[in-house]
Length: 108
Image 1 (cartoon, rainbow, N blue to C red):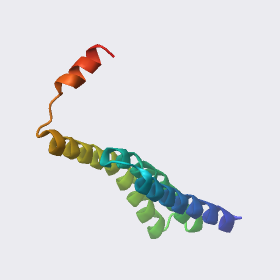
Image 2 (image 1 turned 90 degrees about the horizontal axis):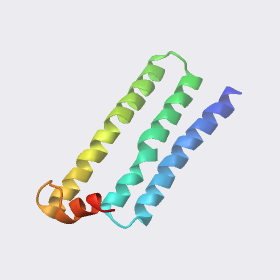
Image 3 (image 1 turned 180 degrees about the vertical axis):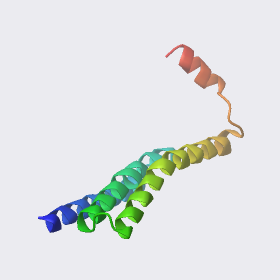
Image 4 (image 1 turned 135 degrees about the vertical axis):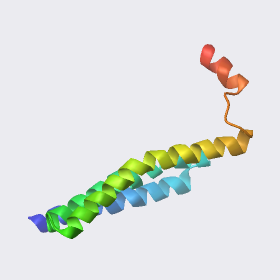
């Protein structure tokens, strides 16, 4: 039974990375591509860490898998935000609210 659970969890992790990669290839711009990094950085590490825990609970490998998943879950949103901010700065020269964005916010 545990072999099936491990296979399903590993399949889920690999499938999420593959689908994220396909989404990256299909998206048009860098800001759209950032959205497709989410499943690869959240679903995959959790599923793979869970598979390791099912296979070898409370071993050093299980602890390392959980720590790796936690680090990826904690740092992924920070990395996506920093990347989006860098893209905006590169496009507009600085990070300020543009006049058309301000107008759009006031009158949607």
